[in-house]
Length: 80
Image (cartoon, rainbow, N blue to C red; front, side, top):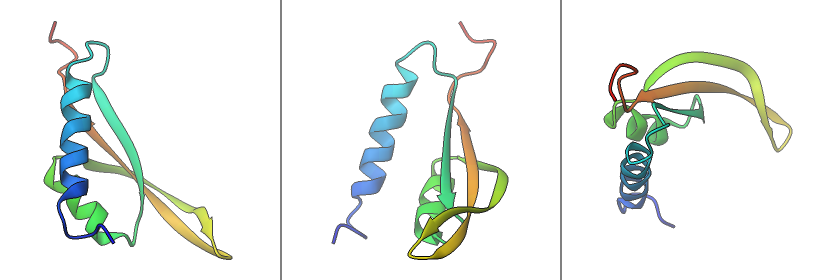
């Protein structure tokens, strides 16, 4: 079990830093199951913002879940 050890935070931070180093990347997008509160809290702590919900978008073990779409602007579109 890797939860509550800060591994997700380290990985997400590394991903964001690497994305910032790539000039063409301006925004990061992700989807998270709406009831996955620990993941949502992690993404929110990095500044991700919710921009939409897709109902019954994910099926696991014969159960459907809603997906929440989130984004993080890492570069201003006007920055060069």
